[in-house]
Image 1 (cartoon, protein in one colour):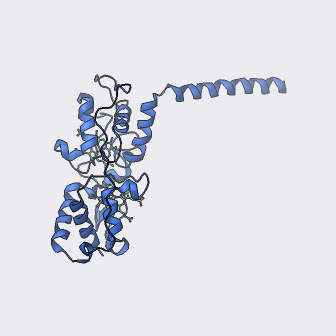
Image 2 (cartoon, helix red, strand yellow):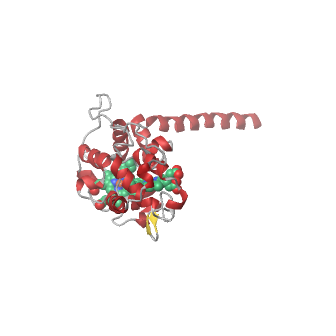
Image 3 (tube, protein in one colour):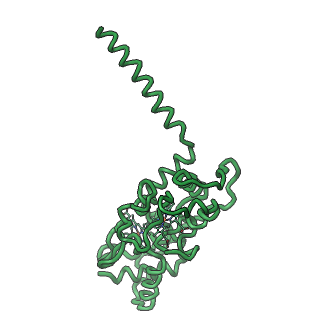
Length: 241
Ligand code: HEC
Ligand code: HEC
């Protein structure tokens, strides 16, 4: 009797394991990879399930798009290329809010398509599958490592103009989607209210040129800034003490 029970338990566990394993295997490899990337980079705003309800959504106006189309059909009507455009170039490129960041300097073309493949599982659509067997055409553009000499004359000279231009660039880029200065802004990244007192400007400058080079896999997007813009933003943040 006892032995029978053990055998029965053993057999059912094996079936359970096979079932669980089968489910994991059923998910397409690219969709699985896209799910992981989405969880890491996007869920703070769009929510784990893409409902537009991530913890940072409360800080955002407009709110992040509900990618499941639960209330209205929106993404279902868009072509894969439309999604590629907004993911790689950001909300600003489609005349939407820049609180939706751009990812073309942060993620490779393949990674962006993997995220799209995952998003496509969240709503119904008739746009066809993404072909991962063909070679990706749009080459990922990643910034070359350009560094700035720490403590150079540039940084020493007080430049009010750079500070004001930096303030504008900060606003235009949508940094406040993830960061607070004073009362306003998101909470995905650290509060920047007194950042000037905390961070070395040379470090900040390098960080803005290529965040992932300074902190591995950081969620902060690489915006592909020109040196000048990174410099101006550094100057603005440096003034926040
Ligand atoms: C800082 C918050 C934030 C993050 C992080 C973010 N988004 Fe968004 N996203 C938004 C907001 C806000 C909108 C709505 C913009 C609007 O309607 O003006 C949006 C809109 C979108 C849209 C709809 C675009 C359209 O056609 O209207 C898609 C698709 C999207 N995001 C996908 C993603 C993906 C995928 C990621 C991760 C790679 C991501 N988002 C990361 C805030 C964010
Ligand atoms: C999608 C969200 C997101 C957006 C948009 C974003 N950041 Fe960040 N940022 C982060 C995260 C997350 C960190 C935390 C890095 C870490 O310490 O791991 C960070 C870190 C930083 C830091 C370092 C802060 C510290 O305490 O070490 C600065 C400065 C900064 N961001 C400025 C900016 C600026 C300027 C912009 C706009 C050009 C911007 N961020 C846009 C998410 C974001």
